[in-house]
Image (cartoon, rainbow, N blue to C red; front, side, top):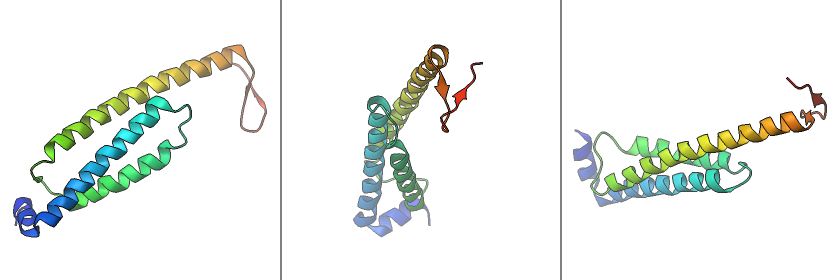
Length: 120
């Protein structure tokens, strides 16, 4: 039995569950993008990523090769958001690197124990 037959046999409840999982994945990806673009610190990024990973594993466990109709636009939206997340993370890394270079060049840099790190 292939995935399409299994989805059709499972009925509309199974297809609705898959749709719900993909919509949740889209929402979580959008939240991650907001976190990358907006907040000063990234403390909330870890829990968001962990939750998205759990949802992604649920999606993989409940879907196979073929997807129910209506899911493709959501997947395209998720992929678009993922590309934006990658770009935002890259931009943020560049900004953080420049900040750290400024701190290293302009002031004393302390490690976690309060000791000065020598300039290199």
